Image (cartoon, rainbow, N blue to C red; front, side, top):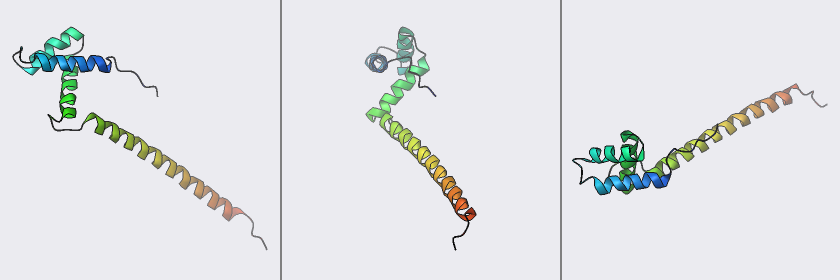
Length: 108
């Protein structure tokens, strides 16, 4: 499976979120600021809203899982999956060698 790069660089995301934070007083609501800035950078309002919410979580202003915690969770899940696969391989190898030992003629 190939990893695809996100269509917006981290710098663009950070700048867009900063623009929302800086200009939300000029608009009637945060959503109005998000809509305005999303149109300017060429992404959907929901995409920019997600970036803003995640930044708020990372800064501790909103409850939820931070980006660092998400990365750690993904790493642990990947490691867990790899360990389960290795354990399954070892179980099959153990069963194979046990059967081979039983099929071997006895030494007298």
